[in-house]
Image (tube, one colour):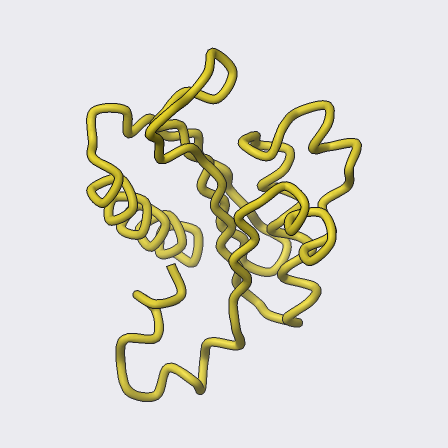
Length: 127
């Protein structure tokens, strides 16, 4: 996600940074998602993404934040199917979290669709 945002001159004037917390351990130790949330809801959940939004916005002291968590495959389960992605966007105190299903896409198509949708959701929230 950050790579797509910094792909233009002057990006450093508006982008403060990003965190890639791929594993549950990194979501807990680096981002600060509570172990209780991870245990009760899993990392691919609305609850996890909400914590990621709030905590990351605070860590970077930013107005806007995007948080993503999902399963791009190749394997899934009943509670974490391939293609399920939660996209969270936050502007100041307003936020929206979207549960998306990209199950018919390849891994790379899914990643591109998530970036496009996250960007669209952020623009919608900004108004």
